[in-house]
Length: 112
Image 1: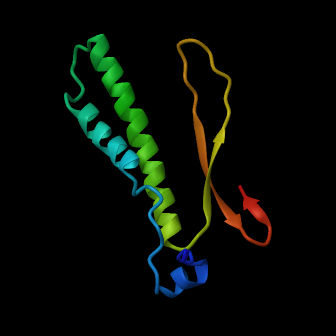
Image 2: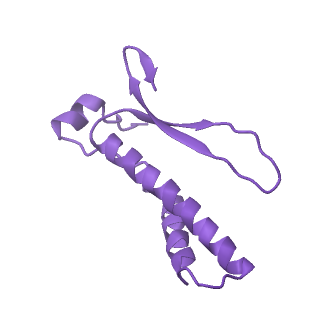
């Protein structure tokens, strides 16, 4: 069976092969659709519990998608980024999430 060779970094840097889009799958498109759906309704002066939930979900999705867009731009520039999730303690009624983009240096490993 012939398996196509994956394009290497040197081919992508020369521009002969486009860098892959790590967020091209339908799953990531669903996140973009959900962000748009949760953006409906704006910021009402008097908020219901549903408004509070919608605004919180929109903010989380928007922030995540902004980070993923920067990650994709970095991949397309031929860099070797990684997304690192830093585990945070969880308490009821509170969510703290840290996702950091790091550059991978092939000679040294990860760079913060």
